[in-house]
Image (cartoon, rainbow, N blue to C red; front, side, top):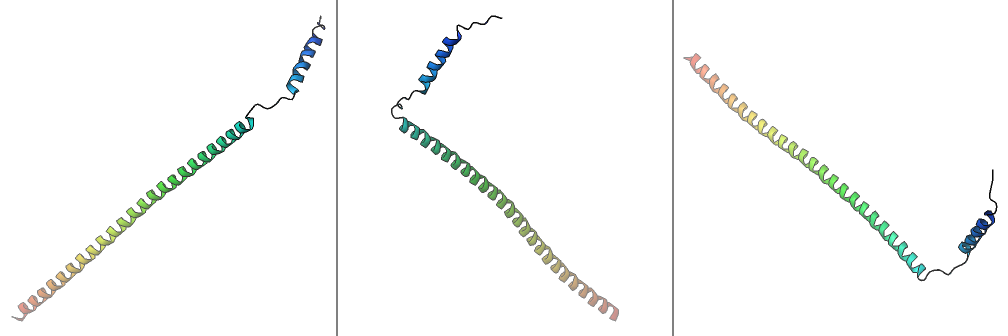
Length: 118
């Protein structure tokens, strides 16, 4: 196997040169701090906005749930009220029927007595 060793020192020198260049101290670009702070502020604002939207969605969902539950509760109370009203009407009708039947039985009993006495 033939290896070419002559090319290795040149590659090593290039690597060292690139490494030195990358490690050199350079001044920061102009307005770097301002741009970083603006990006940070924008990210914070976006996170707050997203969080606020989720809280609004949660509140809206709870509100819709409460309205639906209240509607079902109101419907049940309304049905119960109508049932109680119907029960009272039936009881009133039964009392009237009872009084009419009592009067009818009394009249029949008087009629039977008057027919038996003749």
